[in-house]
Image (cartoon, rainbow, N blue to C red; front, side, top):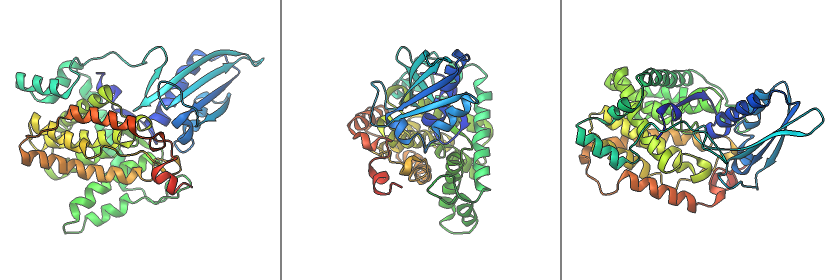
Amino acid sequence: MESLRELYRIGIGPSASHTMAPKKAAESFYKNTPEAARYRVTLYGSLAATGAGHLTDQAIRETFAPKNVEFVWKPDEFLPLHPNGMEFEAFDPLGAVIHAWRVYSIGGGALQDETSSLMTKDLYELQTMAELVQWAEGNAQPLWQYVADRESDSIWEYLQEVWQAMRQAVERGLNTEGVLPGILRLERKSPSFYRKSKRNGFLQQTAKIFSYALAVSEENAAGGQIVAAPTCGSCGVLPAVLYYLQEIRHCSDKSILKALATAGLIGNLVKTNGSISGAAVGCQGEIGTACAMAAGAAAQLLGGGVREIEYAAETGFEHHLGLTCDPVSGMVQIPCIERNAFAAARALDSAKYALLAGGEHRISFDDVVRTMMETGTDLKCSYRETSTGGLAKLHHS
């Protein structure tokens, strides 16, 4: 598995796979072809189907500015390695192609071309939750210690940056009202939910956790700075849970960073053995993974051991199996924003359930990862981020 730096990506929304990764690919291509007179970018499959709503063309165009970029959209044509395919072409002044590159956005901001993964080297030898649990119990160590053992000391500085960016996204979202950009004209709900959380009563906890998740997700939808955790579409879940627990339990920043480390291991397991790409496996790979990460982090902050952490992550993931990716109008707004709120609440419930159960369970986290991949493969393409099925089909604008 790769460094947690490759999982937690600080950047601009609304999509890690449709905004961050295409921008990164464009920057790499431009660096290799600065002499080109103009460029052409062909977007395929899911990247073409929902790219406009995710600002894919805008992110690429800004990278090549002021040079001209022609876009070709092929939503019905899927390249062999991944549904999010794109091809860059550079032309000389006479119109001849001087360089071409086909590359894929495989989820969470990561890229893969047809010759290599373009990923950094693996830092983590252990590749399954079963191996991690065995290591932790065999060495009498918490899961986060494996991160400390495998990464350089600077990982804690990076996780501090991640936590700061998450916290700032929550606070910006709580203090920003109005309508989100795009044709849906969706009203921000986070500030009103937060105001209602000030009232006494049984809605207080729910209103708080909802408002924090909505705050980050709405910032993402508005193109603000967030942390992909593991994706932009699911970026509100983990920060909401951590922000809430720090507030009510007065957790130190140090304990939050350790929770981020454990959550990162959980997300990395899915990224390595499954997929965090909505275009490949549906929203179960995005919001399901985020819920698992947040549930595991919460279980740790609430005093759970490695078994409780694994059970919390498994429960949070299991109950998102089969979740489709069906963004209305191809935008990361409906139903994506609400899903972050509900997943944050479910993550907390999963942690509590695991603690009450004492960590004893039948289905392993690794089993759920495998099942998620099988389920994602079985999902029709229209339910995997093409915006042509499910809610997107019923309410497509």
